[in-house]
View (cartoon, helix red, strand yellow):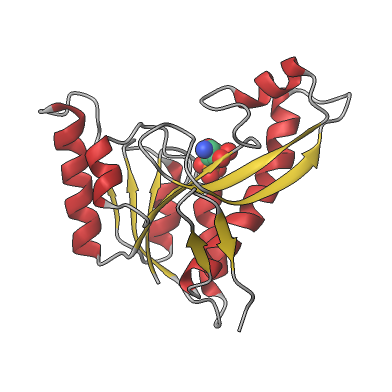
Length: 204
Ligand code: GRF
């Protein structure tokens, strides 16, 4: 399975995916790293791995979100990717982008969806007093941080937590479940029913 990974920041999830891809039996490879931030640290992670890494700044981009996303889609198409992986891509994608990559577009979010959508979710979880938090990998639909849930991982919230500590604990789980989900998809084990419920078939 060929992956295009879209990032905006440090790219620790990208790195976890790149590391997984290094295993000889892993059924996926990254063919494109793309960022909307020209200085995203993750671009170098891609380049170091010998992968095409491109950035287009969204700031001052002519034609607005649709035109921007069309340019991104063109890069993805050129790369030959079969699956678009949002990994800390802090930019809303347009409906036409979602339609273009329907069923081939996944995201990771650092909360147990459908709780705590959007940004600032670690602090929001602390403020709500929840005792467990976690992360979610889901298919992308036009509505932000919604869409069929493929996998989740749970971590405890500790009395000594601040947003940073909680984020670190969750991030460790992100690094496990994202490569795992990509493996499931590559192995053809993931299906979604009409109600948006995902089933992962047993390994053959
Ligand atoms: C992760 O917490 C991810 O869930 C969220 O943004 C963060 C990106 O981290 N959407 P990184 O760039 O992969 O280190």
